[in-house]
Structure formats: structure tokens, C-alpha cells
Length: 107
Image 1 (cartoon, rainbow, N blue to C red):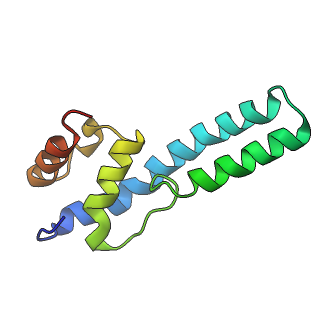
Image 2 (spheres, rainbow, N blue to C red):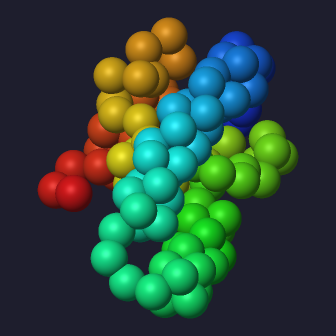
């Protein structure tokens, strides 16, 4: 996604990302507790959790590539992962919000 980077968008993204990630990790922790508290042997639960952790650690909402050139991709991934909604982009430039709204149409 090529564009001139808006410095205010970059600063706001860096400010908001930790809170967005914290909320996702809080939800994931609850899901892990539920998984570990559910039925099955200790080994089954362990390996199911191991698989889940490996999948979840690939999400931008857990680990983001913090290069300016990746900001739009990161925001789109956060939207697609359900970590944020379009309303969470209030305060960002109209250009960025319009682009994300367009890209999320039909999803």
C-alpha cells in the first residue's frame, strides 16, 4: 500500500497499538484458560494450547512489524483479525480512514 506517510497517523498508531494489543491478549488469555479448564487429558490440552499459541503469535494484534512502511498493512490486519473496528480509527487522517473503509467493504 504505497502512500505518503502522515506523521500524525504514525504517531497515533504507535500510541494506540499497545492498548489494542493488550485488549487482544486479554481476550486470548481468557480463551487459553477456557481451553486448559475444558475436557481432555493434560497432554491433549497442552498440545492444543501449543498449537494455538503458535497460530496466535503470528497475528499483528499480538506482534506487529513496527516499520512505517507497514502501518497500513498492520491496520488492515488488525481490522481483519477483529482486534479493532473502523470506529477505532477516529483521529486518524481522512485518507487513511477512507482507505480502510474501502478495503474492509464486503468483509
